[in-house]
Length: 111
Image (cartoon, rainbow, N blue to C red):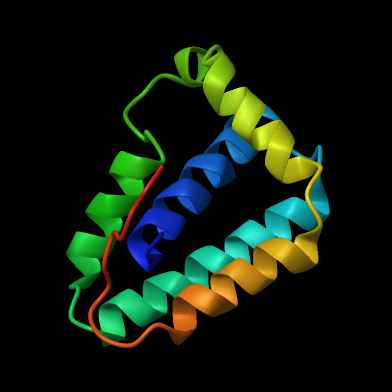
């Protein structure tokens, strides 16, 4: 998995949490917000424009999908539940591994 893949997963889970389960898991929300900020800063530092980053986040977070439809997506909800039950240190370690990768942001092998 590459940093772009991890950022896509994080943004997707972050939006499901924010829009479908607000306030349910504050520790997860903080972890996902931090990962999103760190990965975004890295992408911009390594060649993405702020507009590219925003477009990526909108697409991966399904910003144009109605909330009711997003929250009815059982696969997305299952992924959110998996992240919610994960050890936050493991999520942080994955983010740190992605941030440590040299070169331009890459998708790598993704799900």
